[in-house]
Image (cartoon, rainbow, N blue to C red; front, side, top):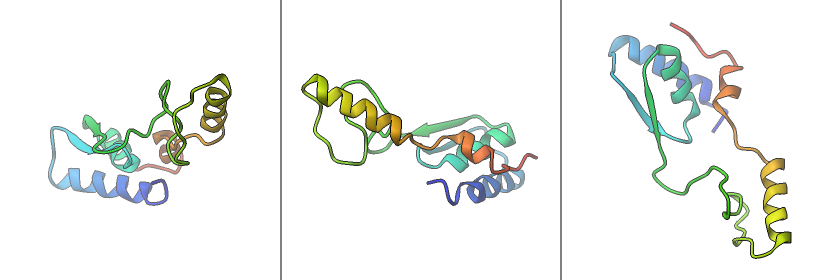
Length: 101
């Protein structure tokens, strides 16, 4: 998700320079597209066409295939895993030098 993000951002800014758009619609996993839209000043909508990746109460962390917690120990397990393995954010893409028009 993160590796090619800067390239996606640069490509999107370049493409929006050639063919302006009113809005960018992307997947929630393509952080570079979100940052590129932000850099170009174009509103962006991220959709989640499959599994919801972000932490939410009552749902185990995405990835390890855990069953929903049924006890205090299970809920603690979910909090610890979520804290130790945070999802990437657009901020880490911006920090790598996203282009600005």
